[in-house]
Amino acid sequence: MQSNIGSWKPLKLHLKDRQNTGVKVYAQVFSSSGPTLNWVFRVEDSCKELAENFVHEEIWKNSSKIFRGKDLWRENCFEVFLKPTTDCEDYFEWNFMAPHFWDFYAFTDFRINSDSAKKNFLTKNLASNFSCYKNSSDNYELAGQIFVSQISLLSWSLNTLQTEAAINLSCILQTRDKTQLHFALNHPSGDKPDFHNKAGFIPLEKAVSTVR
View 1 (tube, rainbow, N blue to C red):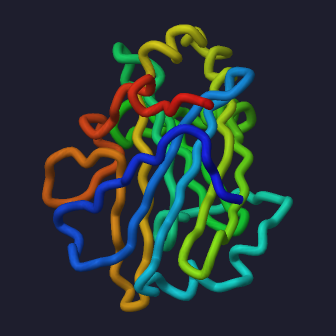
View 2 (tube, helix red, strand yellow; view 1 turned 90 degrees about the vertical axis):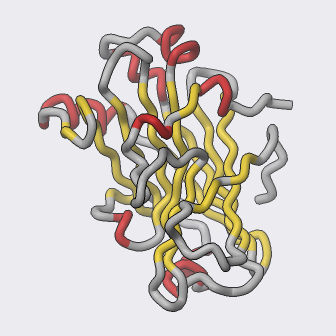
């Protein structure tokens, strides 16, 4: 699948990561018909730096089934962070790993987990579909949907989400020498990458590409 909707936004490598890498990551986030948020990540590995557990052919044979995973961020993980409004501390995190693993977290404040009942409700209603593709020998894509309309079943209206939400798209990739590379639409200042830091979130309306 070659995605041509909207415009690609380059993800930035964290300043404390090694900078002599040829790995490039791009992302799109866009709305379609219905209250869903669509996302796409594209990875370019022209210098063949990424680890075998990312580039192996079997991983990119797209699976029709997805499964709940755990600690996906320890290897190669693509992440979507969403903060519903400007005046609340709650935020959500979706993790994805090719070929078919996903996970979800709900927080009431910086790295503070929601209670189990609320998390179970959100996990059931905010589950995301995704697919993965290998476009060429060094070009990979993950694409999926998040059903943000379900957030309005809580205390935030869909209109508020569309006008006030903030987002960050990020990923962690492992190289052949076991180095981790941390990419994000926006990195807050700091010696270590921290995708949870809401200073790194940007308004959703600025991140969303125009559907053509």
